[in-house]
Structures are given as C-alpha cells and as structure tokens.
Image (cartoon, rainbow, N blue to C red; front, side, top):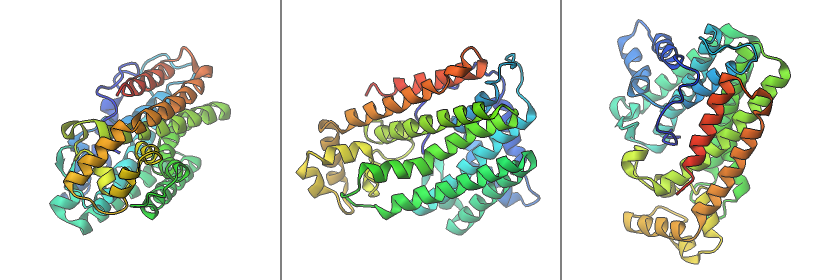
Length: 326
C-alpha cells in the first residue's frame, strides 16, 4: 500500500504524530549500526502515518478526552501498528523485487533480500514486544493481525495473473492485507485508552470499513495517478499480475483486455490494458464500491459524535472520498 490516498495530515488530534515519529525511531535503535540504519530506513523516508493516526484518533474518541495530549499507551499502540505496516512493506518489496519505495531505494535494493527480510522481521518483533508491554489482549490482537496480513498476501499470490480471479477473491485478499491492520489500529487505540467494549468494537468496525475503502482507492490510483504521485510505475499491480477491482470490473465486458492479461506483458500491452480499464468503466465501479465502504465507516462513528477523535476520523473519510473524483 503506497499511502498516496491523502496529501496532508488532519490537525484535529494536534501534536500527536511527532510523538509517534520520535517513538518509532527510538523503537528501532539498536547497538548494531547497520541494523538500526536498515530498520529506520522507511521511517526516515517518511509517510502519511495513516494507521498510527487512526490509532491516535480512536484513542481520543472517549467522551472525556478534552483535545489535549493522548496517553503514552495510545502512542505506543500507534507505534506498534506502524512497525507492523513497515515490516510488511520490507517483505512486500522482496516479493515484488521492488527497487523504489517512497521515492527512495527500497531496503532490498540497497542491502539485498536477506538483510531486508531480517530487518522486516526485526520490525515485526519490536512491534510485538511493544504490544505485549501494553496488554495481553493487544499483543494477541497484533499477532492475529500479522497472521491476517500473511493470509491476505498468500491469497493475492494464489490468483496472480489469473483473469478468473473473482471480486470475492479480491475482497478476501484486501481484507487480510489492508483492512485487518486498520481495524487493529482502531481497536488498539481504544483498548490502550481502556474504552468500553462496545466502543472498541464500533471503532474496530470503522477501521475495517475504512481500510477496505483505502485499498480500493489505492488500487484506483495505481491506474489513474502519475508515477510521481504513486512513487512506483503506474499500472504496477496489473503488470505484476495483481488484478484489482477496477481491472476485474473491466474484464467483465472486454474480451480484448482478457486477451492481453493472463501473463507477463510489455510496456505497450500494459499501456493498452490500462486504457481499456479506464475506458471500460472499471474505475467507476471501484469508486462506487469504495464510497459504499466509506458510508459504513462514517456510520460506525455515530456514537462518538462531538469528540476530537471522531472529528479526525470523519476528516479522514472525507479526504479519502475526495480522491474518488477520478
């Protein structure tokens, strides 16, 4: 996931993300200079920090929160979620043989696959250690989420280059590889704040729905944005045999697209396939689906109306919805 779906960070839960940045750097500091450099590579490269922001905002959804600083436990919960996300990116780049991530050299391109895998493992281990320091439930939730990420990625690999991939296959995959981590971020933020179970469940549902929309929008951008915006080649997923919702929707009515896909393709074929998807209404179908998920996300916040955290989350859904004007 490229995190190109927003271009600025909401200010409503003010002053909290710098605390996350500091804590991220502290979490990956070791006595081994090389490991520290590799583990901090994508932290230094930046990012929108969408998942920790969701955790912070959900931690600020309690009725008693006055808009000041959130508790340190919430910050650490946000850090644990972001470390899982970063660790998964290290592993994804090895799988994809990616050379660029966030407009910088990927870890595997700079230090090789073996070191990239080990650095990714280290990030996941540190995330687990932090989660265990917060609560047994948080540790168990994060561990289950890491498993969900693996299941989602395997599901995606299993249907690589398959024009028979169904929308159900797609939703199952993105549920595991993207929505599960957003749901975990939301739940961890609420759990770290000791919010009631019904609040934890409602915010977890928000995170799931937002995560589904987030991935669909990212998949739309893979076809409609520029390479500079995405930080990777346009149409990268289709070239790698990952047929996302816009492509699957367009395949239903385009025999020519089906004839182009199904295996590795060159640049000319990729450009033609992308044009067919854009002209065939696939993006429109995907945008409508994402909008439906965002409606569900907004509905999950009804009980938290008026809280600073909910205002941040509503802002996030609004900005993501704004990206659907493609």
